[in-house]
Image (cartoon, rainbow, N blue to C red):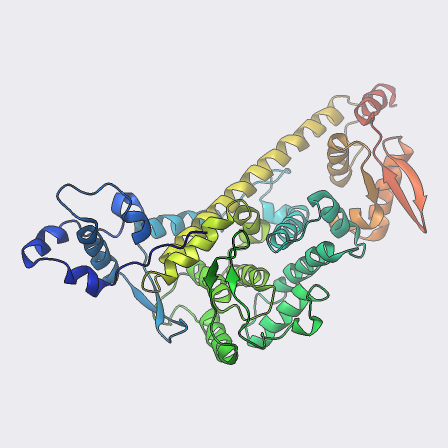
Length: 450
């Protein structure tokens, strides 16, 4: 990765200005040149306003931003504070997230998603567990990983173990949403995330013991970041937890969504662990969002979005480090990521609603079938119609719908009795398969039902 050219300091930017030019330059003082929060490395490549040099243009931009900066109680390696600004782009993103992550979204039943949450929550926990692990190198396919988590079987290899651990951690976070974060909580979370996945098992659940951890671009081994000394990590983690637990009366006021993103940022910056820092950072983001009441974020996967453009994610860190500790670059990147994740959830629910309706229309096309199946059976048949040969287990069906074992078993046996699933025994348990001609069987059943 090409490293960005560090931004000139405010002092250097103005030192190059002639006194006669200062007033003209200040007329272009705008934190969002060309409508974007550009880093110097980007601005210096853009077409100039007429009659200006890039140095003059950057001086105007820098002055307008410095006036917006608020200091955070979070420090870089030299003990200097990180800062953030809330230009209009940040305010717009926060407005959309406030509206879309705390409102209502309709599920397949027509009720708000919160009223029909179990199926969607379980699916989203699985999606985040998989993609977050894939960002760290897990290579298991999504289908195999999802089947493992739904069935409850033990992981078979390192990749599956990473995904399994991630899922356990996401579930664990739900129990912590109403408590104050402590360094012990973070260490416990890291232990869950990394158990049986590290080269040195003793590194799970403890801070790194040396300064040999660096962030490099795996494609060309470019050194991207050297984190703080390991001897500072305990103190830095306590400072981070204090920041995580701060309330609205704390100064400066930090919007809850920005606070959650900054937790993510600082774990990446401090790199307190030998491995698993990314997974821990994303998990703490979810904890902070849930603690602040953004319930919809539980159903989204930010890792799914980040995995599509990892270079942009890393560049947001680099822009912060090379321009006055300005975290606004990272905040804007993550705000866009959150909005994309929320939009993906809306699209997912809309798609599931359409598929559910198709199955419901098929099942309701004959008065003889109407009312024959409950909503869990309809959901299973809908899935089976799109996945010929899929295997269904009682325990997986039980987890997917949060019902007791007896109810889940009855659902599957009733479908098997009607010829819509085929049953076989594996060990001590039954496994049910969707036949390839399921739709035809439904049509036949519709015509022959009495």
